[in-house]
Image (tube, rainbow over all chains, first blue to last red; front, side, top):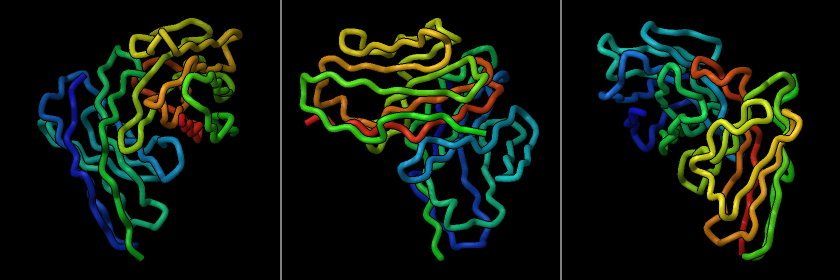
Length: 112
Length: 115
C-alpha cells in the first residue's frame, strides 16, 4: 500500500481552526484516504474517510487535492479534547481494512 | 451502542511466561483485528478474522503468538513464551465488513509490560 507523509507535530490554540496536512504522492486511483486519531491511553478512533470529493461529518472535514496527491484534515474549532495523534492512512479498494498502515502520525497539541 | 471490550487493561509478566488477552467486538461485526502498538509507533496488524476464520496472519509471530475466535464472536490472543520486545499495547478492533470503505472501532487496548 502507498505510504503517507505527515508532520511529526502541530500546535493550535483552543477554538481556532486546525489544518492537518498529509502527502500521498504515490496514491493510486482506487486508494481511499482515511483519518483516525488516538487520544492518550485510548485506541484509535475513526475521524473521516474519502476517495475523491471533499467530505464533511460532525467531527471534521476532509479536503482532497484535485490530483489526490495530498489531503488536509480540518478541525473547524479545536478543543482541548482534540489533542491526539492523527493518522492519515491509505487503503486500496478491494483490499482489507486490516492492512491499514498507520505510520507515526501527527501529534496535535491544543493550548487553552 | 457498546464498544469493543478488552481485558485486562494492564498486565505485567516476566519474560518466558505466558499471557492471554480477551476481546469482545461490537455485536454484529463479522471482522475482528488484533494490532500491536509499540510505544511511539502506529498500530501494526497481527491477525484478522472474518467470522471464525483467519483472513490474514502474515505478520503474526507464529512461534510464540496464537489467536482464536472459536464462535465468531469473542477472541483471545496468547503469547507463549513472552519476550521483552513484546512489551506493547495490544489493540482489538472490529468492523461490520472486511472492505476498506468502512469504519473500524477499536478497544482501549491491553498494555503489556514484560520484565
